[in-house]
Length: 113
Image (cartoon, rainbow, N blue to C red):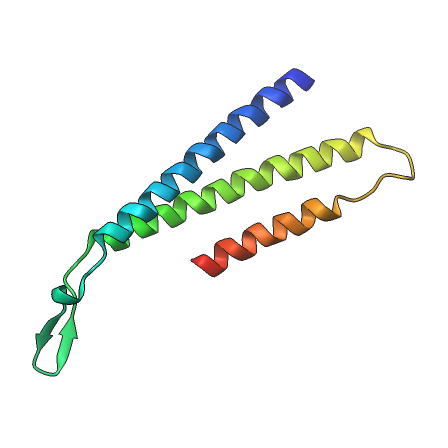
């Protein structure tokens, strides 16, 4: 049972790492593809920008980041729940530092979006 739990945690950690790298790469690509001042078009009183691939790169990067957040939370919650089942003594502590980091990771993800 412990071996399967460890293997699945390792696989999820690899998936999270890959999603993080893909998200970072797409953000960098989006920055290089962003619209320039010269791309701004004036049409009478209205101005507009032509379609840009930067928006698509940014959306896909955001999706990858959210997926990595969800998979990371699955690992944390699963480890917390399995630890609660194993520990039956009264001196079991709640993971306050882990909860703080979990909250901060979601806060930063939504603020940057």
